[in-house]
Length: 80
Image (cartoon, rainbow, N blue to C red; front, top):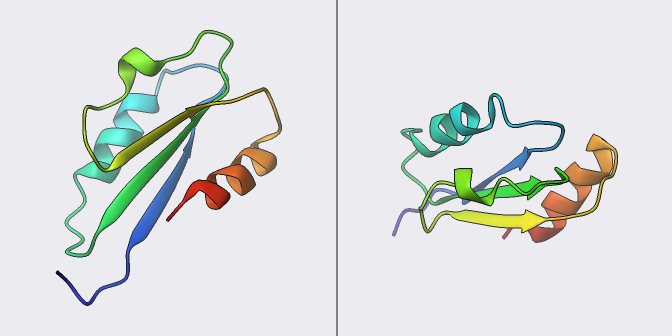
């Protein structure tokens, strides 16, 4: 167990998925030695759950449409 703080990334995946997987993969490939988690908030009308990386560090939520600021706030509330 590292003494480094846990880092939670918030990824808002609304309005399309063109760069979603690139962003998720880049976060998960980080070289940070502490614990990390990626909180994904998907507010697309058609969920993109099939694009979610199969990784225990990823937490996925499908939610209603809302402004990106509200999504970030929601993601922060889910982060551990």
